[in-house]
Length: 258
Image (cartoon, rainbow, N blue to C red; front, top):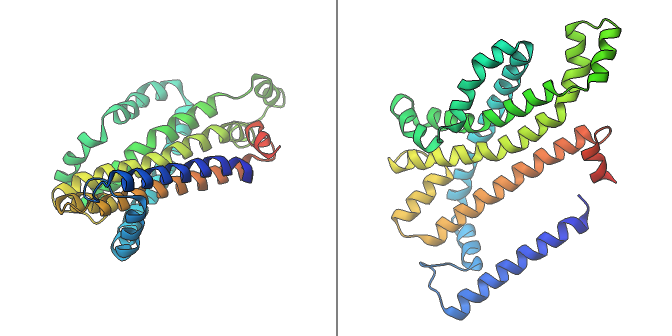
């Protein structure tokens, strides 16, 4: 992304913060109703030790869940690509896990697991399906002309996988990875909220619940700001990885490079 492409949304974001600050000052809205951005920033500095230690907990869970979801999603997609019967047999289970709200699964997992494990499983379940579905779509979307070319040269199944199907699936896999990264953070936050309601957990969502009980609204907004910034950082890092891997040969990355 060019600097000028990032400049416009940055200016709009700064203008929105300025409007927020101005409205709070003009209307004299107390901080316990709606804190101004400056108050949230000062709270972030004041409680930095507590909030950033919670951020590390949430970020650690998110990255672990994303790594496990990536390994399991790619492995299952490769397995489903080998047989239509396997796809018909296993894909419904993955869809059931995807369409079941994680907020409903989290309390149940907390009954059978320790809070740390339950939060990790929830984040994994949310991130798993986009990676699986996008990778499976990419493996099935091989160009027919290239497939026929490999057939003419009597390529083995292993050669087809390494030199044809995996490169063809890479753009879709990276798209699923970007979606899964954000969803892993959402899953971790939702599970932490469920754990925080029972007085367990140390992540950012638990800090929001704790601050709500204390009516510390600026701390709630500060924790929410850290969650938003973490989501943006994860998306930006995965987008940069996608551009790096695709910039030399895929049209989507070439358009950005041009």
